[in-house]
Amino acid sequence: MADEVILLDFWPSPFGVRARIALREKGVEFEYREENLRDKSPLLLQMNPVHKKIPVLIHNGKPVCESMNVVQYIDEVWSDKKNPLLPSDSYQRAQARFWVDFIDTKVYEPADKIWSTKGEVQEKAKKEYIEALKILESELGNKPYFGGDNFGFIDIAMTGYYMWFEASEKCGNFSIEPECPTLMASAKRCLQRDSVVNSVPDPEKIVEFAFKIRKIYCV
Amino acid sequence: MADEVILLDFWPSPFGVRARIALREKGVEFEYREENLRDKSPLLLQMNPVHKKIPVLIHNGKPVCESMNVVQYIDEVWSDKKNPLLPSDSYQRAQARFWVDFIDTKVYEPADKIWSTKGEVQEKAKKEYIEALKILESELGNKPYFGGDNFGFIDIAMTGYYMWFEASEKCGNFSIEPECPTLMASAKRCLQRDSVVNSVPDPEKIVEFAFKIRKIYCV
Image 1: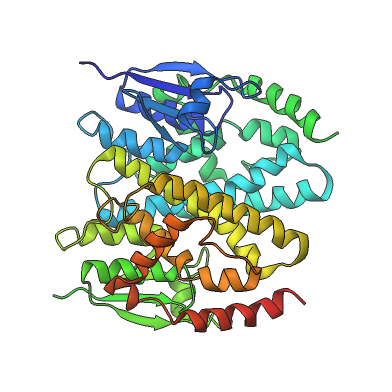
Image 2 (image 1 turned 90 degrees about the vertical axis):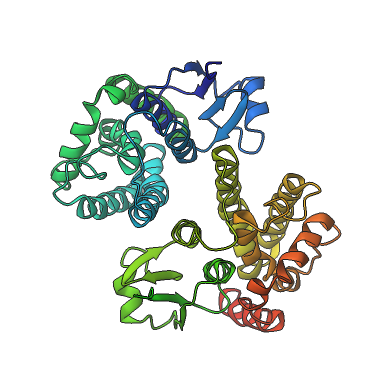
């Protein structure tokens, strides 16, 4: 029996896109279901009763929640398929998890404030965002990807932010590339991959969306 | 050559204790090094330059940081030893990671405020803490441990909070057991395990420590 794979998602989500990319890296067929986050579907509420958030991967009727947990699950379940996402070595795997945790705290928090605040709070967020990106740039070093020669777990976590770079820059009126040229080069490389091209929305649409929600938060 | 395993830790830490317990569950010999968090050792700053936090597991000279990442690393590296901590099934593993993430956000945040705040902020934190514990109690169901018949990944994550239950109750002037009797029964079961008894400090010392730092935060 073929696997039934459904993804509950929301198109501009930097978290949802991680699940989309992981599924496409693995060549897993899936049904994409767009959620209206202002009127969540009964299925979403049933499948993620604790957080009521996307993405939710429903694999043969069973839900997996939290984006990087979904990515790790995909990597484990479809391990016989192409493109391993996590390294096989335990130490390297621990390092990958460490950096993803860093991204989900130290990148997430300022990134979120850049589009949702203004004035001093936004200035502080921009500074913290660049600081976090510089730490990541230093970890990236001369490698094409965080995963070395291969696009991997950390790259997937970051691609959600890469696809928001333009919107973040426009909302915050600043430039990332002069501060983090090597990271930006890796971001461009990631954004050109087939799995990513097929998963991320048009950057202009994200910019438009960001300014729309910014209006609501920054009245 | 025998493994060299060093743990940089701080005795009342609910995070540090997770690493201690995991090592003892696996029967791994290790050298415990107490850190003075007001005057961190050069080794801690060198081994965890990003967060500068304990616990850090140093395995043959290489650091692993972030408590549950350390526990997962220990489970993977000493997989030939007794007591697997994460389930072998990918779906169950994803569920375990989901709940640990829940603990590290929804339990951590109010728990931290109970000892460090007073008045309305503390009252709100107590309410949120009990709500989070009730969700966990519902997930626990009738099982002796979150890991089913075996003490596992989620149980280790929670034991850091179990050892602080008495201090939380005394700082917040409330009782957990009437609200969450099944969770409390599992907590007592966890606290009686050899690996835990040998890893957690005397509860009275934690109460004393909690009131000491409470004085600094709640002037």
